[in-house]
Image: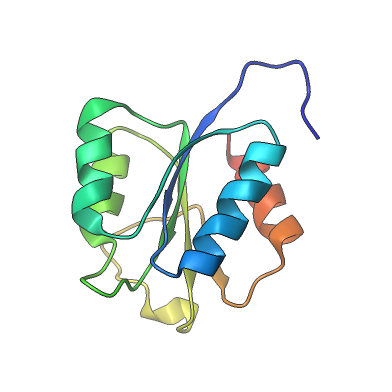
Length: 119
């Protein structure tokens, strides 16, 4: 539920259209301004050149690549992010540092609580 605090912006990078829309709907319902969802790294990078989110949720493995370059860009600007993945958390590259790694399928309330605590 929305509170009276100013809206925070969240970037979503997820190539599964159903998951992407569920994420967007949940975060809009919670009062976030949503950048995306983006289904390609190139689209997320274009958006990051235009504006910086307060936080991000990234799918680790996309159809066209991995989210590494987006994660590195977020880290360069000290923007916290969470990774969602169907693979084991141990498969997250060691050169990126997400605030959380969440395995799919995930509980939306759990992801939302992690995102809220990171902002």
